[in-house]
Image (cartoon, rainbow, N blue to C red; front, side, top):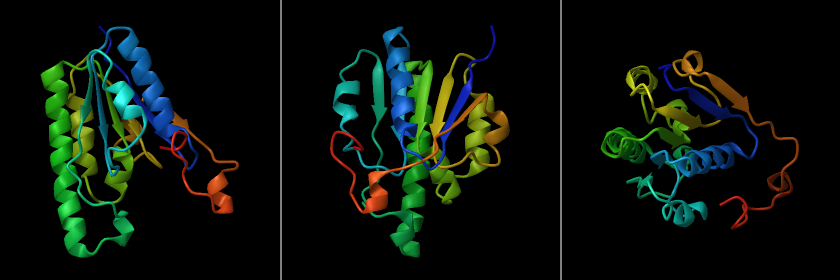
Length: 176
């Protein structure tokens, strides 16, 4: 059997999470156990309630208690965030094992690495040693030095125009 593939959805455009969620729904519809883990995000996205009602769809709740962006944090807050992200990654790896996942979506994990919250080599080591049948999707602004060469698919979402450029905030039901 050929080893399952690694996908990266990256770029400055909208649609990375949406594409990852779409693939996870497709996989779940084919009877695959799915694990979704979101990094550096709260658990308020509109899709979560629906996704968690699907059979064999598992959401790993992030322990993050802060609503700040990393650039807004002081050093103590960054240290605590780093600890939480590392624990969240460990919980995600455990959920893959526990649920015998065939698809793992790690939303914004690439940004967690680029912001220094998770070690790139730790992520790459997991990818190299994952179960043979585990397809992995990662999202974030850009592939990391260690994940780029491991990816089978890299899709870049390019922003051409976005309402945020005109000062409009994210809209419930569309962006979250």
